[in-house]
Image (tube, rainbow, N blue to C red; front, side, top):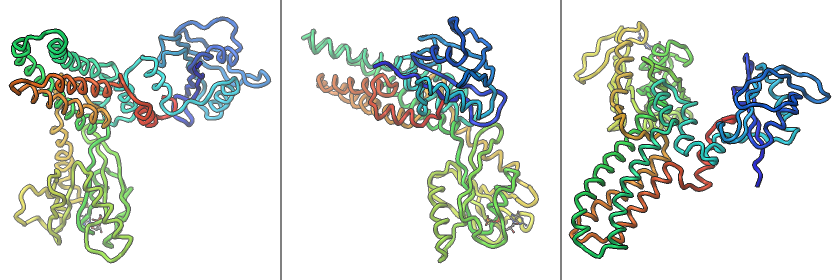
Length: 440
Ligand code: GDP
């Protein structure tokens, strides 16, 4: 079936100096000629300043037309990028005109999906594109750029080669060699390879938390009894008055989240309803939501004040205990590691910011290992890991069951192919690309 030609705006919607409309597909240049009334042929990556005509040959705008010839384009198809003036009415009119020629509106992520289907990038790279656009720190941009360049795909393909090396020794034994002493002589080599593979995969899986922290930002949840000054503290830390504070307990009933960066590192600060016993239904909903937020927090700031005690929310979560309102009374309790601050005067806030930012030091990454950026990749790589571990165990037996071993290793390779998207299903593709924005 002949591919459709798609069109959409590739820059954000709104008023700007320039907006880019992108066309991709077999009729790209036919439609571009109709739009510009250009008669001579376009040349690959040769920009031209040409008019934009709409119905009745009326000139709407002048634009820069930048053509990319298949296969040397983002999607692998013919592409035209039309940079027109950044007015939403101009953009809409241009897109409508191209639609009237027979193009269809691009679905979210369709350009990247076509790039994947045409073999320009693998699934891992495609997923990194989506995250790159949304990532909240420069560090994340560096990491994801490497992935888009194919660094992780290359490292995973090396792991695959190592597994295949072991698999081929076993298949040789199964198909050709009848000599048991051959497999015995290879047993140590195979185990050494698999042990190394396990280390690399484990490192890759743990990289997910690091990448995720840098792309999404660490979630910092402020919790404590009502009126201890949580909202005032969050406001003071973000230098903003977005959150309503009042002397009446229980004001913050909805969860309020704000994205901020500290020392260039991304965080989302979440202010919550005070945790306490209540008969008020609306407040009870707020408290339930607070508990949800606490469960998904990366850092809990447990706030208390001179007239209350520190609360130890959820075990095994990283917590910072903050004694607020120090301007009224110093903390004299015996709990260790309590940070004294005053949201009102600003004292101690610098130390609190530093302590929050330092949390990133627990996310160090070995640069030689592949970086895993999505839950999908993490899950399929976990599948590879369990098959490789099972194989190592089988190899430890006196007479390893070679057929089962070959099956496990084949499974491991299959899961690796799913990670990079070498083999995939429509469901996976749909869920990956539906998270993209239109125009990417
Ligand atoms: P929340 O219910 O924990 O969010 O508490 P709020 O932020 O609404 O604060 C409750 C009251 O304590 C307000 O009247 C604040 O002005 C006051 N407050 C908050 N922080 C401080 C502080 O550091 N010192 C003093 N003196 N008052 C504070």
